[in-house]
Length: 263
Image (cartoon, rainbow, N blue to C red):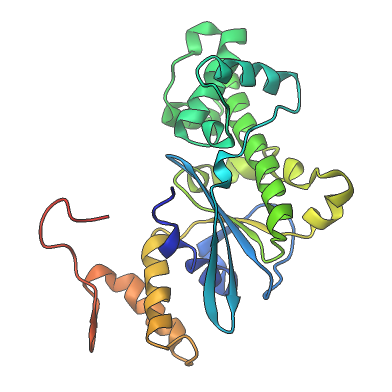
């Protein structure tokens, strides 16, 4: 279960409306304001949910889609699948699209090319790949992006996500420029008869440093009925920048007073 999704998802509407440095676009595509949006969160796990606004209110459609079974599409992916299958009775998409998943992908490739490179941590793989110092690491990260693109494209079809596909989590923002030149978008669009449909959908990485806090601000603003006012933009910015200590007349968000009580 992706515990932060409740407060993260409302921040999508701020990202969609104001853009700028909050998001990083991958390829082309448009955003339909009244259509469902999709958020994926590859990190320690893989969160997936859809979100839309109905009469100015945010509605979240929760899911456990990250646990859908993964299918290989080529010889290398079949080899990777067999590698994961030796460790797990069932290979879900989350097994690959997480920090440990990147490590498993790299290990599967290394066992066929350079066994001495097996056993690297995800952070090391990402660094070597983005700096261009290791062909194997780059191949592993490209494969990770390819799997993410295929899965994101499938989920876009499942949810009719013409409101855009937004990628959060702890991995994508760190490799945003790498993803731009990776197979991500090509695999996202490669959906047979629905290629044109997916080509029209925007895919973006959430780059805001505090998307969870931003989501809390949006939720609070909705609760206070402030999103309909002309100052809602300033209100959300103020809560975001002041952090958990921000006070409002009868509504207070305070930092936990004792250790261990945080999120």
